[in-house]
Image (cartoon, rainbow, N blue to C red; front, top):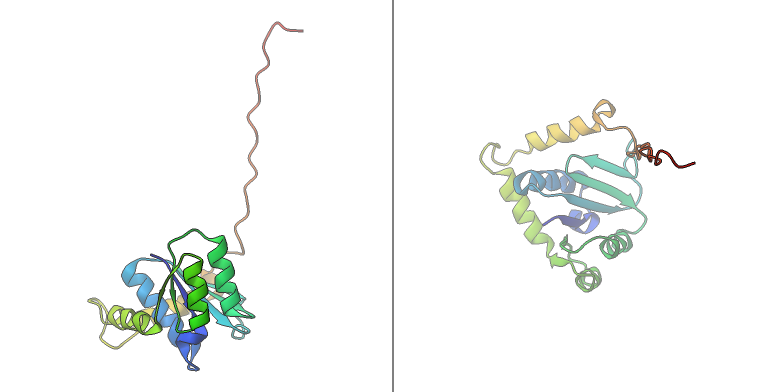
Length: 160
């Protein structure tokens, strides 16, 4: 089940990078899509939307409003991690599963200590963040629709 994260709520006034690292670790461990919403402007040199593999980070004016708008327009089946009671009530009403931030952090801790990773080290996650931060590794802009030619319709022969 994909995750929606209330980034500032999860960060609790700490560094946003810790939420990004945790989201990448959980995304790799569970092989799910994670969408993180942060209140406010993005860090210098980063656009309003930052794509880190299966993790997408969006910097918006008001994260709660953006999360609810996303839930209303998206299909069912999202899990929202937040401790904000008002957001939790509204997200449940929109059909999402709501979990406390502590549950997300437990999953993140387990993911960083999973086999194949050094215990307590997020080095693989840090390397991935650095990889996607490099503009040479980003996909160019938004995908555009490819215009297709319509197949020619055959006209019946012999009719004039």
